[in-house]
Image 1 (cartoon, rainbow, N blue to C red):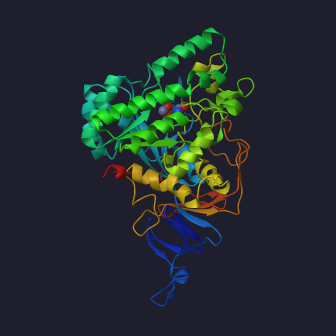
Image 2: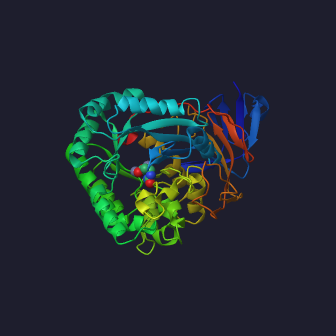
Length: 473
Ligand code: URP
Ligand code: ZN
Ligand code: ZN
């Protein structure tokens, strides 16, 4: 077993910061010690195999991105990052665990969909990974399958109120699946947009010759998100199912979640970096077909309407509990360009898995969130929400040594030619400047990123079985 001492840094957790040294034995953190500790008369730095100097830097628990779609077949093509490329890019950006979505497609059995996802990921990942289950066909068989998911380490499943004909579930199906969630303690995850109503607007816009990417945002108006969020909350209320709404972008949807929490309902919300920084006016309305880079669902919202500012505010007040990426990358050439002349054919998704920790750290620099809240929304809450806490999301004896040494005096210029490691032909974050830098990343004790070099290997990452959400106990 290799022993490592991370010395001289400021350890930041969700609850505070202090100068401390972190001792790692093999894959595990074994002690968090006062700086310069002497143990049984020995200077620790002489007793270990390696010392990492973190002076002037933050030592934080590795990022947990609880919403990714590696290799997802979608929109007539498939997400361009494989588990190999996507998890390597995640490591570059200080994320040491992803939770990807295993897919049950229409007509398929849930456990077969799950087995396919294990085959895609096994032996290919740079960092640890877990799965949520997409239930794309709610029927008697898949409802029965819910009962066995927790034993597989899958303690959450996602349904879609959007995408009719693809993953869509109607209210009757959602009601039945939520009854299953209430019975089993699985977390219900919801894509909350009114898909059938959106499809009417899409047809009307196309008939009027409004085919540019911008109209993706017009068709998927905030009312569609608010209405579906409210409906999901009501169905969860009736059934007693816990509810986690993914990729929340509209301030009105946040208000629905906050109101439900205020009356004691177990509902939670996630947002994504794109809904904090990007907008309908600046990105989706970019000239020509450029806006296709930012076609995702829920869509980017109007800055004039104040959604982005409200989302930062909601992160401060805990009306939104955490930030994931919804990483679903597509290249412009051969993928996004399927929607030239018809925005509804542009594959939905943005690639961000590499940049979440940096983009959210910039929120600390800009005074939007505290340093501790940065750790909480990117690591600790995802761990608690999805049954990983203790092993992940914390710096404490017994936890996996998933650690990031973050340099607040460093700088990161995001761009395709600069920091990009995702398998895409562009960056949705081109030109973003971050006043900080991911220096060193340890994944279960192994240094995988150091000094702008990747030292990991395909297969380092293991499947992690998750327990039930801590927020329900
Ligand atoms: O645009 C998105 N969000 N693509 C991925 C699929 C989903 O709805 O999460
Ligand atoms: Zn979704
Ligand atoms: Zn998604």
